[in-house]
Length: 295
Length: 192
Image (cartoon, rainbow over all chains, first blue to last red; front, side):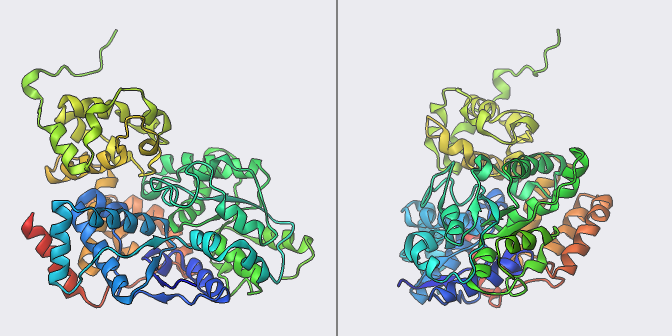
């Protein structure tokens, strides 16, 4: 099997610790030990692209160069990192005057980049390379009885459309179904959560996230599963405000798809970081136990 | 009847503006815009914008530099790429918005008393200095810069919840080889 190097990004080391806590063990069970990219730096996300795109390309170039030295393609669980790295990678590979300049500066500092690295999202690797059949083999407890809305957000499906449909992707649904989870039909799965705007523009954030959460609720979902740290964060922190504006008590658990994978693989809920949820998640355990499983 | 739009005269326009944005966004197709409005109708934030993405395209084409750079619209672009992947003229609209943001920052004409440009600038500053972003320090700097202590007070309960669940770090995150990063960014800046 192909080897990857793991680029965590800032979020999974702080507000999305439960993403890392679940994704690493899950990959290990599937025979892929993910080694962390040495001395990785931040990708700059939407901030650096808005302020200085040459510097944005340069800092991503540093990451790509370190991966190239290790001789491994990058696996990036954070959707914003995935997009930044892919965007910079395309830019640096396309031989423009600007990219040549950045590459030569990188080289001068011992960070030569020849453009051989691919950037992948874990969902892509799990579905396209490892495959759901192999995932099914590792399932100890089927998570029967749990209904989940899988939410992809924007950055892994647009603009690159690399491994799934840009409006109605289904790879995460397939993953969750292989665990015994029922995924609901969910047209809001690629609607925007507001990204970096949500924490600062409360009303805008509340409206965008309301659309997603209410749609999931109407479809009878017990939880929303996501693959992006910022989506998870926004969907969690806006619920108090949404409850106030729309006069309804919203308590929709927001989980990483990898936490559910880990649970099905036999890890405990503590090991998979479920206690880090800002939303009470007791209802999930009730549902899963209804399916005949004790977790 | 009231007319809302300010009248602009030829001499107030900058006919080089289109070329500047084309170059910076790496998108040559801006003048292929047919004003169909697909961008505005696929934008999740269009209702909050002073000028819809379609208008931004027309104003950019027409050289209305001042109006475009002072607009809130690029700062309300959440970078979801819905418009970009749907544009029938293949205009990289999200990238155009990024280019407008960068020019507005460079010329110091972005909307003041609005948190988004300040947040991006502060985040870029922190992550280029330390090599990594630190949310707590970003928030503190942001509220300090926008002189908004209420924002900080409002955020406090969330901060506590994050602390309780182990999801907020108090330390300034940093890479080991800050020297290399500093040299790299300095070299990029010098050449520009």
